[in-house]
Length: 366
Ligand SMILES: NC(=O)c1ccc[n+]([C@@H]2O[C@H](COP(=O)([O-])OP(=O)(O)OC[C@H]3O[C@@H](n4cnc5c(N)ncnc54)[C@H](O)[C@@H]3O)[C@@H](O)[C@H]2O)c1
Ligand SMILES: [Zn+2]
Image 1 (cartoon, helix red, strand yellow):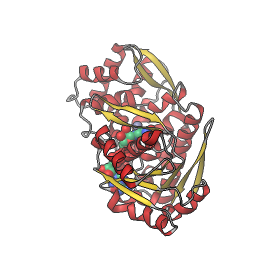
Image 2 (cartoon, rainbow, N blue to C red):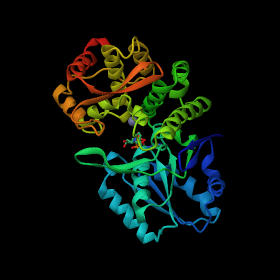
Image 3 (cartoon, rainbow, N blue to C red):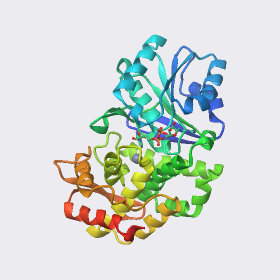
Image 4 (cartoon, rainbow, N blue to C red):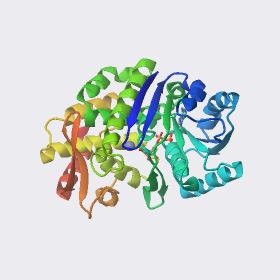
């Protein structure tokens, strides 16, 4: 087992990564001082619940904890106020009070939704992240929780740090292949923004990671979490450097938005976005020759680096302008300064973005 501590100004919490960890949950709870008087509510989606809820419930119940259970429909649509209201109702009926806590068992959808439930229920109760997707090595760390509004993704939310993250890597075995690759995109992102040696290591080990070879998978998750933890500990509420975690997300979110959430996995959209950011960085002179390596690394993970002409340029640009990070209508991008380092750039000219979108459509990026 590997353990990373997330160090924040007023709080620190552990991330445990390894095989068979759900069995050890009672010890982990003890480790953070949680006693049996604390009622727990386990939240999972309709795919994850039948697969893994028992694995979490059993050891806890055997250790004398009282655990309720809620299952919400799988899919991004569940990250909604409507689902949240239902969850709140179930918590009230279960008798969860301010001494209770939430266990978020699932991918980023459940983590964000159940995390926001914890942030808002009775003005905030603690929660634990139990990630079950590779992508969730990213979403479970850092305390951003929330739901979508029909007019925009993640429009309603909070910063609410988990009390602990327990990543039992055994659960990844049942993950659909496309979801594994989607998670690889965020692993690649963490390497590209922070750690060139991690990027080289990923290039060397991409096959083992895609095949979920246990040692390599645990190391990739650990190194990805270390990057996330390092960035978040410097800027918990995103007043500055934390924005670099959005590398590839300006174009990525726009693509998700115009394609109607579902045509692309989050990781696929971010992969196209990272290819675009690399091209844009080269065009604007923040970096040279980052695109070939970026494309090669993404392609190794069978992630897309080009844009189909189906997605109209005007719509993509309009979506980028609506991005939460956009300031006063100007385009904001995280741009590479090399492999393993990036810079936040405000006021990027529209002409440069149009040029990059055209190059992403052309044969150049294939
Ligand atoms: N809070 C953050 O910092 C942050 C960061 C990145 C992404 N996100 C959010 O994360 C969400 C995407 O997360 P995701 O890709 O994990 O999606 P997800 O939670 O929808 O999981 C993807 C699919 O895999 C299924 N699944 C999950 N675990 C499984 C397992 N072990 N075996 C079989 N099937 C399994 C799910 O039911 C779902 O169908 C988005 O809503 C995004 O906005 C949040
Ligand atoms: Zn992301």
